Image (cartoon, rainbow, N blue to C red):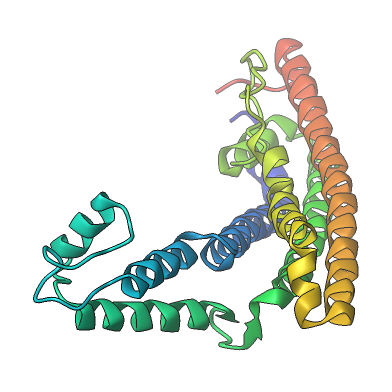
Length: 283
C-alpha cells in the first residue's frame, strides 16, 4: 500500500503485541462463558425439584404403592397412567425392577450433591457452590478486566506509533483484519453498530450465573438452616459479596471496552481523512 516498507516494519512488533493481547481477551471471554455454563448446568442438576429429584420422587411414589404381581399390568401404581406406560417402555415390569430403579436414582441423586470440579477433580458439597462458583467467576472476570485493559493500551500505543511512522492506514487495516469482538469498520464503510452487542452482553454472563445461584439459595434458606444455620448464613454472605464484586468488574470492563471502541473510531476517522486528502498513496 503506498508506504515505505521500512515504515511499516517499524510498527510490526507493536501490531503483533496487540494481536496477542486481543487473543488473550477473546480466550478469557470464552473461558468465562464456559465456566458460567458449567455453574448453571450444575445448579439445574442439583436443585431441589430438578429433573433428577423428580425422577426419584416419582419412582418412590410408584414403588410405595406397588403390589407385587407378575407385571405392571396387574400391579397397582399410584403414579399417573403415562408414567406407568413409560416404565413399561423402559422394560420395568416387576416390583423388583422398580425397586432397583429407585435405588439407582437415589444413588445418582446423592452423587449429584457432591460436585467435582473439572480438570482438578476437587469435590465440594453442592451447598457451597455459591462460594466456589463466585470465587471462580470473580477470578476469571478479574483476569478479563486486566486483559481488556492491556488490549486497550496496546491499541492506543500501536496507533500512536503508526502515526509517527506515517503508516496509520496500513496499521489500521492490518489490525482490523485480525479483530473479532470489536468488529471495527472497514475504511470507507459507514459504521453499522450491531443490534446485539455480544461483547458487552458476555460481560454479564458470570453475573447472571452467580445471580441464579444466590437467588435460589436465598429462596431455600430455611432448608439450609435445618442442616446448619451458621453455615447457611456464612455461605449466603460470601456468595453475595462475590456477586457484588462481579457487578463492579462487569461495569469496569464495560467502560474499558467502550474506550477501546473510541480508539478504533478515532483511528478510522483519521485514516479516512488521510486517504481523502491524498496524504497517503492508494495501491
